[in-house]
Amino acid sequence: MSKVIITGNNLTIEEVVSVCRNYYEVELSETAMEKVKSSRKIVDDFVENGDVVYGITTGFGKFSDVSISKDESELLQKNLIVTHAVGAGNPFETEVVRGIMLLRINNLAKGYSGVKLETLHTMINMLNKRVHPIVPQKGSLGASGDLAPLSHMVLPMIGLGSAEYNGVTMSGAEAMKAAGLPVVTLTSKEGLALINGTQVMTSVGCLTVYDALNLIKTSDIAAALSFEAHNGVVDALDHKVHEVRPHKGQMDTAKILLKLLSGSKMTTKQGERRVQDAYSLRCTPQVHGASKDAINYVKERVEIEINSVTDNPIIFPETREGISGGNFHGQPMALSFDFLGIALAELANISERRLERLVNPALSGLPAFLVEHGGLNSGFMIVQYSAAALVSENKVLAHPASVDSIPSSANQEDHVSMGTIAARKAKEIMENVRRVLAMEIMCACQGIDLRTNNGLGAGTAPVYNKVREYVPVLKEDRPLYEDINKCEELIIDGTIIDVCEKGIGEIKF
Image (cartoon, one colour):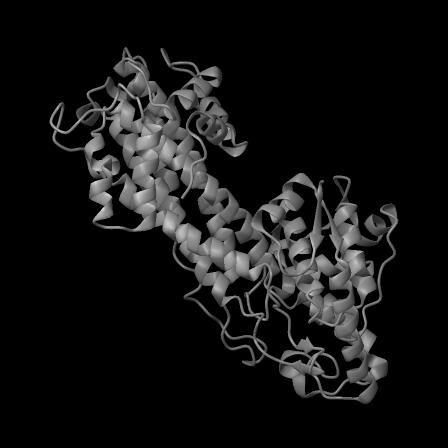
């Protein structure tokens, strides 16, 4: 059933991907609806009684000491959205926008934000009918959450801004009308409830984590193919070596590589050809393993965040309180996404080194740049250049965003996370890593052919065969970007992992 039931409590990364990329519909659970109505009743009581509650009967940020009357509450919420929608840069991809909307819906469904049920249903209907607000990528400090981009998300709901509907960009009012959806009039607390949170950084980061979990599998497959192209020494993968330094990711990687290489006639034992390999082969379990452990840590943080309340103030119906805190602060995600970017960058670092060893005849014993008749043919010479450029770019992008902060709102908001910048950088790093791994896989397959394929491993053979369906052996120069594109597409659509796991079973770590 292509539907996700929203409770506010048990959304998974896989469900986020299903909604974002496969257009699963969402539906609010009965329990969530009751919680939303309960919290809304508290907000209405605050307004009716004139209680002093931040963002409900007061202004925002530095204006938190300015009282707002009941009659002014609707205008206050509208003004909040229109003045905060000041994003910059290119718009986010549709899948990211769908993630932003989904995560905001899940946050509001927990029943601690005080929105009207009708407002929440409007967001759900927009998502299901594919009305996607145009949301600029830049302009968030990541504390008071993602105020600027989330405001752009809200604009079409109130008949402003721009949105994409059926793949066509139009005004927000036109998109809502075309989808048969009425615009809403925001009232007390609702504007703040819709934009105070970490859903932009978490949408970007959640999708990147999902892709990273697949890339780490791909990196093991690429390394195994390079092992065979180099006639690598498998003794370094012996379980005894890793059990005496029992980091989980390291042990898992060694086990996975041995499984991938099971039955291979292309690997060697210690002393047959050489005593030991260079670090880029021999230390693959240690390097890939460290990235596995880091990515799994980030995955756990994301799973917590997508089911958390990141609003302010938080409405507690049980005690009839509206408590102003700091759950909108993106620091837990900012640190995690910086860590994610660093962990991913290392996969490309070591991949490029394995690729360099393949194309360098002094290190591989293969024809220079993996092509016969070198000189006339340049072969894979510039593939390594391109990989090196991407790796160097990653080193710049991996500089942490979370160590920066800049005060805002007249120093009321004097420490911010930069979490959305961290998430965007991690995504860009991931895309560069994917390209480098595609290059390594392509070159490793060429190296295997030049070495004479005596029989590949249980996991590498089906991958090699699949690559060769799309990328023939290079015998004379041709445009290689097309071959790289084909290898990268096999990574993106999951084919590389699918054919491999059909041969050896699921790759688990």
